[in-house]
Image 1 (tube, rainbow, N blue to C red):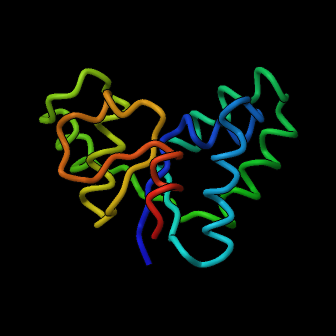
Image 2: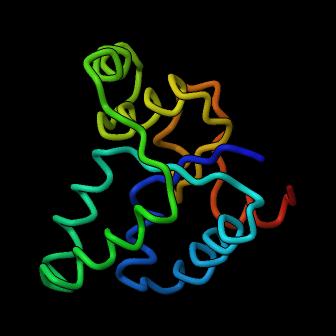
Length: 137
């Protein structure tokens, strides 16, 4: 089963039901339910999701979403080594560098994001949701 890391924007597409992105993001979570992929997020993604979704959905609904999310995906820790590795990457966005480092250090095979251009200094395969869904498993 492929190990997949979801960028924060993919999770927010679901949490905030952002169109036109919601449908593909929701299909990705169907693959987790069907045991076709093993989904991951980073610990820092959880706090980012709360902070961003709270502004639109409020505290209670954001917490409920996170409670449901952590039942579905595995959470990759962010340790000192993860941060040091991220600092060494040649990426413009530090948040993306942290996610990349966590993925590489935990044997994740694919990173799914809507912003592929942000993930330049990695050997992990980076795909958009649509690319992943159309390429097949």
